[in-house]
Structure formats: structure tokens, C-alpha cells
Amino acid sequence: MKAFDDVKVLRDKKEYNDFGVYKGMEGTIIEAEIRDRCFYVNFIDPNMIEDDIGILIDIEDLELVKDGGASDAEILDCLPKNNPSWWCKVEDGYILNLKGERKNKIPYDYNS
Image (cartoon, rainbow, N blue to C red; front, side):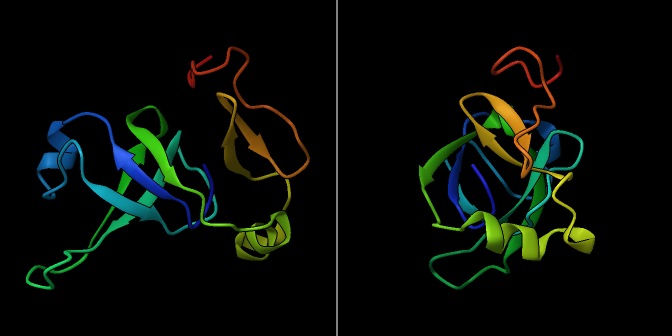
């Protein structure tokens, strides 16, 4: 998972529900960096009745639906100060930066 990918919410949490986001909803990751093991995800009402919802969602509560096709160069361009050391992707259960360094030691355990 990375910027511009479409994702699905895997579980309900009070902090999501309070903003109108529920299990099964699909949205798009709209910021390149990962903060506090969360992606910033935007949800758009397909009926255009409600306003868009932008909210931080825990990585472990997201599932990739569709690759948005962002290249590493595009992600780098969106990172603060174009710093490749910022955490920005999740691959094979690891939080990675553009240098290939891993933040978590155990795959899919984002707190390790």
C-alpha cells in the first residue's frame, strides 16, 4: 500500500465511526507519508450527497483494493522535503521508506 492506492477498511473502530467511516468502506490513500502507523485516507460519497471524509486509518485496518500506480519518484515528490527516509509504503507486511529500510521487525506486526 502506498499513496494513491484504493483501500478497504477491515474493521469498525469508534474513532472511525465517529467520522462516518465503517468496515467495508473503500477510499483512497491521499498522503504519501505514514504517520503513527496510519495512512490518511479519503472517502468519497458516490452519491455526492455527503461531504468527503478524510481520516487517519491504522495500516492493520486496511486492505489493498487497487494499486494506484504511483512510482517511487512520484511518492518522493509528495514526501515532506522530498526525504526518502520518511515511511511511505507497506509491502509484504513491512513499513518501508524509499531507501528500502524497514520500520517494523516482524511482518504484519506494525508495532514491532
